[in-house]
Length: 76
Image (cartoon, rainbow, N blue to C red; front, top):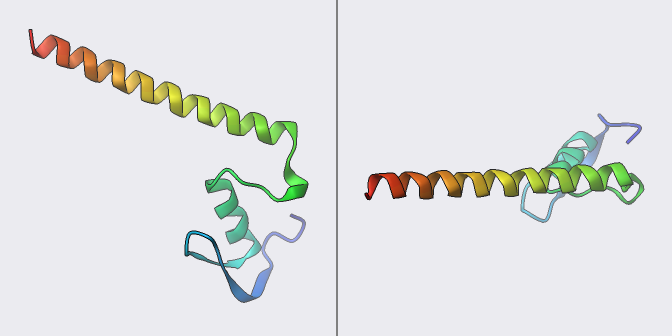
């Protein structure tokens, strides 16, 4: 967005119930929910989303592995 710090005249109610009072608040909410404005969709955006999801999946699998390994060691 070109004017990132512009304040809105009225607060905008977002789908999760929070309110955004500026463009920066709106962009922050979009990034937290892996969303973007229509003009922002690009190959780089999709790659960042895929990389973030892959990292979360790997972290979850590693945590499950460690948990199962500890359970195996302590139950023997």
